[in-house]
Structure formats: structure tokens, C-alpha cells
Length: 112
Length: 116
Image 1 (cartoon, rainbow over the protein chains, first blue to last red):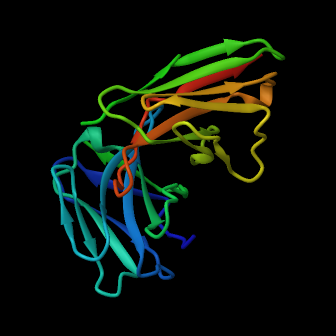
Image 2: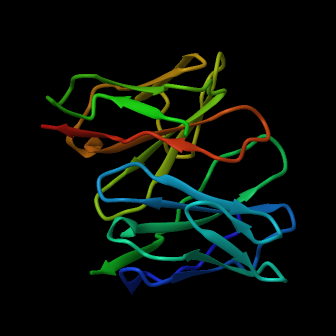
């Protein structure tokens, strides 16, 4: 599986935008880029995913570099409830294997 | 959105006993369910993948005779930790997805297991 690299931690202030980076220099053309987040003592929550084009949903935006070697998860206005560990995961889209391999993720702290 | 529940949310058991954890998809049919384990301060580790009506596929290093997985229906998968030992104490999390082509996995809230 192609690997991802994320900063261990980031801080943000409430109501400000947050840009969470993810490097995936060995990504293949058939890898989806997924983002999940995990609040303390809870199961992960799906945030967003994309393949080549930028994606927007009600939770966040995903900006994918033109060469696909990196991506950025954008939270437009951070709230205290956004404090969580954010995981950037690559999933090979070929075949029927849908398993996700979680790395260490980025711990986002949101200051009031 | 799609909801996945787990039961129980936490369980304490004695060493040597077996514990069953249920994972249910409440408002959708899950053709595939996944079981993860998470130790404190660590990331999730995939234990196995189960498809409805067939045997689970276990990840390398996960003992299939110790962690029994049953996916008997499209809305229920169970994980049984047999002859539990203190080192099996962990946070067990399941996830579910719908049919082929659906990328999103929906995760349960997790079950915290403490083996004394």
C-alpha cells in the first residue's frame, strides 16, 4: 500500500480555517485519497474522499495537487467539535479489497 | 447518514472467558464489515474483513481461532474473543460498507474490552 505522511499535530483557533496537509508521493493512478477523523474514545468518522479533482461536502473540502503527490483537507471554520485525530488514507481502487490502512494521523487541537 | 452500532459499549471479563461483540448496520445493508483493534495512544489496526455469508479474511498475525468472526446477515457481524487474556484488552471497532463501488466506510462507536 502507498504510504501517507502527515504532521503529528496541528493547532488552530476557533472559527478560523484549518489546512491539514498529507503527502503521498508514491500514490498510484488508481488510489483514492480518503480522510477520516476520530474524536476521543469514539470510532472514526468519514470526512471526504477524492481521486483526482477537488471535492467539497458539508464537512470539508479536499484539495488534491495536480501531480496527486499531496493533498490538503480544509475545514473552513474550525469549531471545538473538530478537535480530533485526522487520518489521510490511500485506498487502491482496483479489485474488491476495500480495506483501509490507518497511519498515525494528525492530532488537531482547536483553541477557543 | 448511515449508522453502525456496537454492543456492548464496554465489557469487563475474567481471564479465560469468551466475549462476544456485536456490530449492526441500522439503516443499510452491509455486504462487507471490518473489525479493527486500537490500543491506547495508537492507531487502528485492521484485524479482519468479513463478507456476508462467507468466511472472514484475517490480517497477518491475527489468530482466526482466537478472534471468531461471524457475518451471518447483511446487518450483523459478531466478533468473539475466545479465552481472553489481559493483553486482549483494547478498543474494538467495527465498520461497514454497502455494495461494490461504495467507497465510504461507516464506523461503529467502539467496544472497550478490559480483561482482568
